[in-house]
Amino acid sequence: MPPLDFALNHMTAPGLKLDAFFALAVSLGMKAVEIRNDLDGNAILDGTTPAEVKALAERHGVTIISINALQRFNEWTPARAAEAKDLIDYASACGARALVLVPKNDGTGQVDGERQENLRTALTALKPLLDAAGITGLVEPLGFEVCSLRSKREAAEAIRAVGGEATFRLVHDTFHHHLAGEPDLFAGLTGLVHISGVEDPAVSVSDMRDGHRVLVGPKDRLDNAGQIKALLAAGYAGPLSFEPFSPSVHDVADPKAAVAESVAFLRANI
View 1 (tube, rainbow, N blue to C red):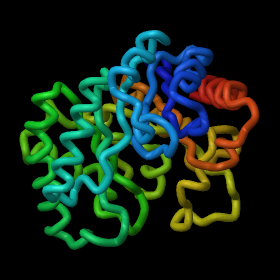
View 2 (view 1 turned 90 degrees about the horizontal axis):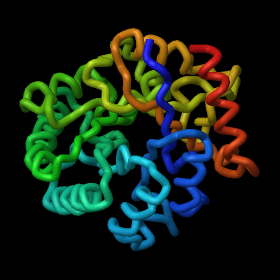
View 3 (view 1 turned 90 degrees about the vertical axis):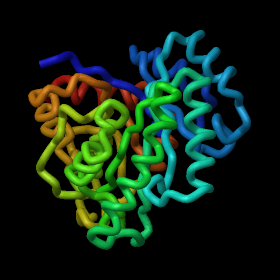
View 4 (view 1 turned 135 degrees about the vertical axis):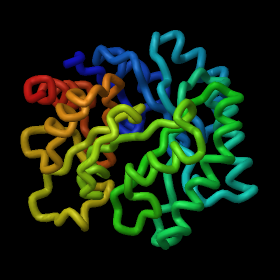
């Protein structure tokens, strides 16, 4: 089994400026990071140029594995196309290797037939943009019942249907995988794994939301350790990126110690 390759998504410590966030990753022995375009007062929303981001990453010796994310990517419109082009250009200029693609998650676009066609349309349009920039598109199905793309199998079928195997990869998010209840892993098509746990014993699976997502520990209800073991056994050898959304994690006084504790737990149980 390959060694565990941990990475850090900026959502782990969204209050840190990019410089401090990169320093946190390095202090944890991590060389791979994900930056986001949804953090107010932080890169990318604060106007930080891609050249500045690239220089910071080079100074810290980290690789930006993704920008997270192009939202509602499977609702392809002229506005979405322009947004995609801007994000792909930014990714290319800052040295990011991939762009995460997040589907509509509001109860629309779920009709069988329609949702598959919408997905293929978006992937077909994105493919030449990503290829021209040398950027990978990371398709992330969400397990929420209102999501227009819950199934990794559906995503994999669409990627193959548009001849996109060299352009697109799947995100296996341990939280969303658990919520979707889809057993298949698609390790060979997976380009990134997002990890977070849920410990609240009272919340039902169908009521789990981003706010429940904490660092993975012994009370984890999602079986992160089992999911990761299965992915590695099936051939996945890429990064395992921490992506907790809970305010309880964001407000922790010592994020380095908190993440290190989760790393130690996973290393001991995988």
